[in-house]
Image (cartoon, rainbow, N blue to C red):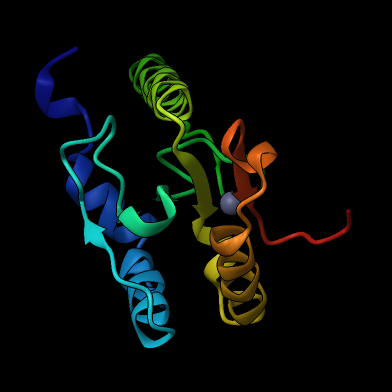
Length: 155
Ligand SMILES: [Zn+2]
């Protein structure tokens, strides 16, 4: 297959993923900032360059797009064309995410993953409130695992 047969990642991303919520990680940063949290963004000194890192709470936050990070939420749809190409790419993304989270938790850093679907307008407030609770929870148990914030709240 010629290289030009592959869809451009950027245009695919823009057309499929972006849309009403143009920058989910900005939504998260703004909310935290307005609630008095101070953070570094795209903190490259840590594995995976977390979108947000709060030194005071030793907490790293990733804002994951449901498509690129293969979220089992209905927003992820396997493209019909070039499946082998996409499958390889998705596997790589998932493996990298897992490795980064493992390294961070082994450093005693709390890891919170926010899925993009959790930032849609109907659930955004709830997600962000929950996020703040997770950040300030200092029980040891919290540091040893990663936490995910989704759009379905049926637990
Ligand atoms: Zn999702």
